[in-house]
Length: 116
Image 1: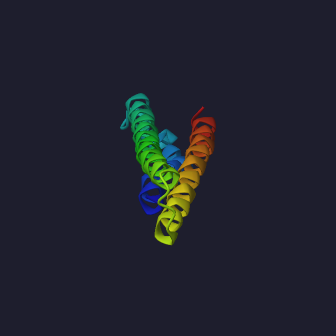
Image 2: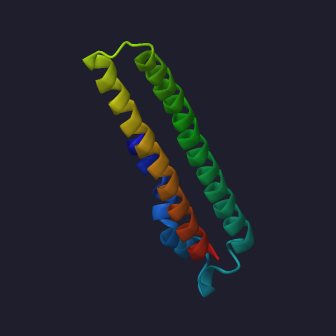
């Protein structure tokens, strides 16, 4: 998931470059519709942010369900080593996904500041 998010964050990582190539120089003002191009960039950024947030929240939801199930199994007295190992692994994954949500917020804020 982290590799997927890294690839999906490319638009945010390149926002300054995108703006520099979107806004026409004086010699190209008549040839490029800067307003339309900026609108398209804005919409692409919005879509990227929405999709990434949806993916992260979906992963959090799925991992939370797995953690809940594993905890229930543990509470039923099935405390074997493999179960505890799997529970810790899933809890670590859940914390990672929750931290990715925080990273996403920072990335989004940075992009909107540049775009503003």
